[in-house]
Image (cartoon, rainbow, N blue to C red; front, top):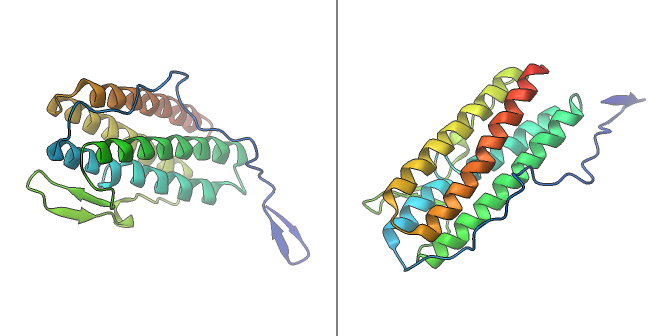
Length: 182
């Protein structure tokens, strides 16, 4: 950040930033049949405590706080956030195909819903702790996706979840590399 008189300027340009994803195509977004129980499971991946919505919000917050001092790191984090938004969109499509609602309420198996809240986010002040929180969130997402794959008997859905896991593993690798630079 540079001061010009009384004006503070952030010179970090995000032009050309693209989603940070593994270079593999996604399987088609399709399901074998409507299934409310599966929609409920995916609603947790969509907007639960461990979710794509939480990941997107946390990464955008991190990028905002880093951009004026660590521009290149902020660009990578924004690219990861963009990938998480794409995951969010794919999960939303699956939920709708399954007959569920995309309403920012994560549903438990008994049908009880809990609205998404920013209380789910980890917002540490220190860059190293920020990256560690992001790595932990990615690991938790992978574990949750693996658990959901074991609970869902639909190869179409599981193929999409397995592909999302590949991106999350890639994000962990990048975050670990950034940790070495701070």
